[in-house]
Length: 498
Image 1 (tube, rainbow, N blue to C red):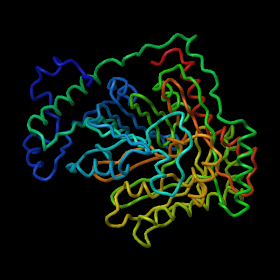
Image 2 (image 1 turned 135 degrees about the vertical axis):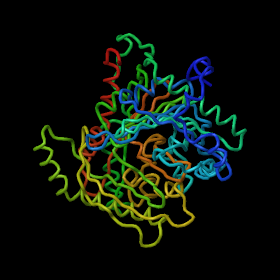
Image 3 (image 1 turned 90 degrees about the vertical axis):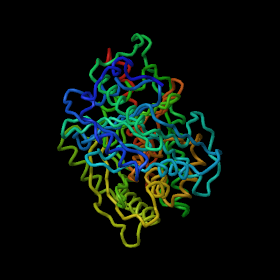
């Protein structure tokens, strides 16, 4: 396990070095009567540090993550960095057990003390819930060939966490105290972890070795089907829809190729060209995921659960006036409206499976939101979870989103399996966290690159309904992939990241 700083950096510290840590040892002993995990935290003002610089200082050879957010051009309030997880949970189709139950068991084993002044996420499981987890829920055939080879579930169970509050310009360092161990010794280790993190954050940003420019030339990533094949798939879907098999299906294509740049540099490029409500970098060691997704899948806060269907897309205009004109045309398009209404209804049905009767409602309907390269129609559906239903049960009920599969969902996914040549893997699944306290926040795995063995994989698609035009569906899939492909090129061209 990588050490965050030299042992000597903390060996001679006195208790005054930890004066800001809370709760105290005496308070932790009292909390241990009811809880088996006590988050020890220290909060300090640091308006010079950024999540990117902090991540570069803290990441080591172990799995790590960075979660950020930007909404409508504004930086989200919180960013989270995790490193040195206490455990990494992986599960693939064919492995024993139920993946949701395995993850839920890990979280339920933790009784975290609900201390005041903690950030909204203070620890839990962070990572990937792949599209193909649906095969554990619905009657689908085995998946298509899988050239990438990702696990279907990959979660880091946090031990140390750094949270940025961009409103208050504070940084909170959290290290877990385990009451079932020798509590005093565990408390001491947590204090040392906080001190080590502060020592590392005070140091310089490391500069990893960078290949010479001649070795950073990125050839265009190659699609796994021709334009003619993609448009033929759309035509086939239209025939299925007109025959009554489905109302909507979401076909996709994948671009793959060597990426001779460090994966985190691609993430930095992506957050520059496509700031989004959900931005994430996950390093699992043998693969990395960098994404900037506009679309939440499901959020659980207490008993309240929400999902925000996004369906209906146009490229951004070159001016505010052109954006307004395009948005008006988008909202007036019968095909886009029909597709969106259908997916709002599907979201209501998905939440209805886990929510108390009569609590599911549409909170907002058909608003247009602008992103770096495209604009979307967005609605919000909310409800209250039934008693006995947990956040991972709610995730199971909606994964994958109708906006990435279609309606009715099972038949749409069967058609996708027929037409797409490879297993989807992460694409169309979920990225996010499930906290030790029962909350959950996930987005849809789109606008994302997966990097494994030096090969990058980007996937994009769009919803097809009865009156869709194959050539326009192809253009939409290209437009949705553009931000990620541009970020890869930017990372390669950048002379040197500061």
